[in-house]
Each structure stands twice: as structure tokens, then as C-alpha cells.
Length: 150
Image (cartoon, rainbow, N blue to C red; front, side, top):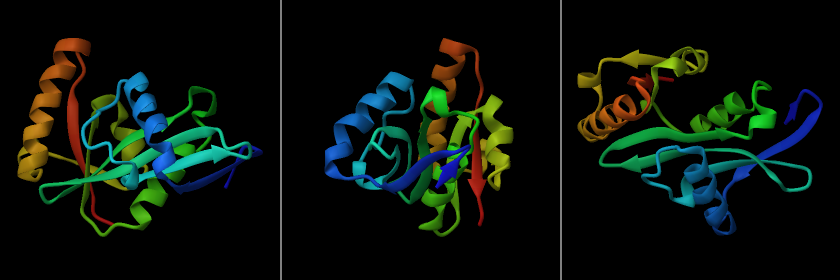
């Protein structure tokens, strides 16, 4: 994959990536639930340095796109969208996600649509209610639920 002249490749994560994935997600302040390296795709440069990552986590009948991270120096170059596309290529709809409302237009550009919380699968609804409360108390940000229908 090329991004503004930068050569990157996206590959499935390996067990050797587990520590890096967990440390990256923690450092970025992203949702740390369901961090199973087997669910991740990792973008890296020619030197093998991580450029970004993303996963589709599975739990209680839900598939949720999450843990999307792109290194700050590479943002705005299409890598996040490329990671989403690779993750979704292996999935059948629906795939849900929860995100800060500020990011709604980004995910809409990748064919996700916002849905009311009560339309989310029960397990995601519960998780999202907890996340919404925390995000509002800590950051005064609203968490929303979106779905990809293919």
C-alpha cells in the first residue's frame, strides 16, 4: 500500500505483536476490552515499524470494529481507512462500532451509519452505556454507536 509516497503494508497480527498492541492501545487511551492479537491487522513501514492497527473484536454475538490507531505523524494520509477496509474485507455485515460523536463523519465516509443506542445488540448496548458515562464525565464527549451493513 502506498500513502503519499510512503510504502506501508498491512498484515495480520502475530503473537509477537501482542505486547506492542496492548501498549499502543493503552498509550492512546483507547478501549482496552477484547484485545486479542488474533483479531488485529497491523500496518508497518518497510523497516517493520508499526504505523497503525485495527481490529474486529467478537463477543456475545457482536462484531465490533475497534482499536483503530494511526501514528500521529501518519494521520490524514488514508491509512486509517485502509485499515478499516482490510478489517471489513474479512467480515460479513453487520459490524458495529462505538466512537466519539466528533468522529462520526470519518466513519460515515467508510460506509458506517449512526444508529440509536437501543438498536445496538444487547452486549454492545451495555458496553456503550458504560463508555458513554465515562467519556462524558472525563472528556465531556458523547459516545455514539454506528453500524456497517456492507
